[in-house]
Length: 482
Image (tube, rainbow, N blue to C red; front, side, top):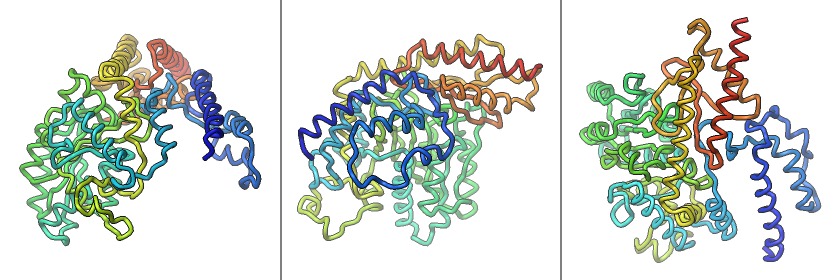
């Protein structure tokens, strides 16, 4: 890589990205293109001669950006946020520039050691128990996503129980979670060879605000033990995808411990809020967990991907995922003097992802990060108040963080058409291009989700979004009543 050529072209790229952010509100938030649009715009084969960077910029502007859904738009309120920041961007840039492949300590000692240190910092900020720190038997590791995190811990839990009860007992192993748990758990079970009929998806309802009931869990475990099955894994969630429900970690932890089960806590979205003392109590009971996961790339200003997994017994991961071919052997690893993160994850190769989290923590500091979280929660509270003031709408579940679950009440109280009315409202709102929201279903009811979390979102964007929803609802109701 020629240094001066890099300097020239990187400046142009930074200018291009900066201009994109300046004009991001000019784009439809949700891409309005049709499937297959890009194939009609690009050649059938790669060029044989180099093209100019400006030509590529022109193509990005004319052909790529129309097919982008703008997750960093201040009018993006769908799913959960995927944060970016100057600090995260700079860390990502540095990681790309160094371009190391840090699968073991020796391949870049700084990559391994910075990851251990930064994840200890973050664990202390959210007041995780000391057992999750690297000074003991545990520690943290950056995975790509929460899906990867739950996969590696279910593999560790599976192998740990099979060493105790015998490898032929795989067909007897049972996994437990609520029906609000992320679908990543189902995929992890499929990969881990857990029989589908042994994956217990336990029902929740509005009486617990969609949290997993300890009594329901106890009953399911008791029935399985009576049937000769082996309970081995429980996944609790703090901040479910549909409605930010919070499972009672303390009670679930007691149940898992008394049944010698692995207890994993998925706080992918809501974990970031734990840096604020007033939201830390939602993970009370985490001391009973074997593993804990949060996505810094959701709501912690760290560019995707950066999913942080802490574990109390790192040897459980290593025993399940370690390989030691001759071509990777080295003195430090052979002497067990170092951590080799290749043994904590599915792939061998790994990027220098801790750089961007390190830069976020240093360039913003705890107080600014706390203010950032609190601002989004206050904006969601503002939106909730706006919804509550309009008798045509209702709040469906209590707001805990920065997600509001609501719906448009069907005309004449006709619940038979409630789902269609809200589905139509969702389509109408998103088709305007002015905002983007998403939906879920709770207890058979189709509801709308408004998640505040984009770094650029301000109160004016929340107010404007509500006006779009009101206007489209008025048009929809006028049509249905007419």
